[in-house]
Figure 1: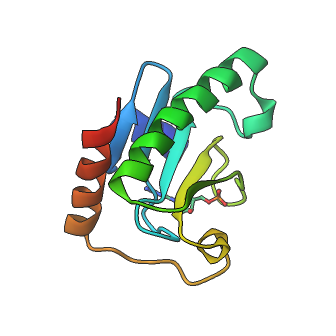
Figure 2: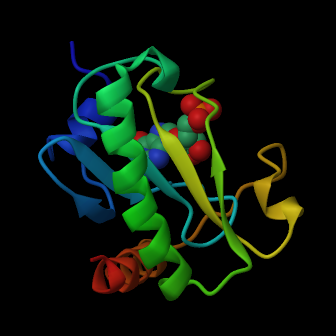
Figure 3: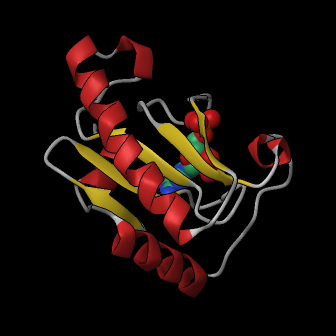
Amino acid sequence: MADIFSKIAAGEIPSYKVAANDEFYAFLDINPVAMGHTLVIPRREVDYLFDMEDDELARMIVFAKRVAKALKKAFPCRKVGVAVLGLEVAHAHIHLVPMQSEKDMDFRKEKLSPKPEELEAAAARIRSFFE
Ligand code: 5GP
């Protein structure tokens, strides 16, 4: 049975899509640590990022770089933080977080709960900068 992120990439479960190609899919985290918090995933089912083959992982990092560039334009920030946790969802993913300070990378803090229209507006804004 497909995992939740595979279903999201396949469009079987709705998401706030940020960018996509044949291999990878980027969408907003539903409970962001900061506005614009985006997850980048491979469409292929693989549990953990560092279990991926070198060439596939390299392409994913390059795709995540394009997403991060769009994110920085959409949500001006000091840097886009990068994290790999995978403690909750067993489908490889990279967290990209627009950071004003290191506190924005504290995944233990209470998450934000944006309204659907706020998430849609954020996704549309990031999409508009994706090249
Ligand atoms: P991790 O596996 O890296 O520890 O955490 C998984 C992340 O995925 C969390 O930040 C959580 O908010 C996010 N997440 C879990 N389920 C969903 C979902 O169904 N949709 C979206 N957009 N994000 C999710």
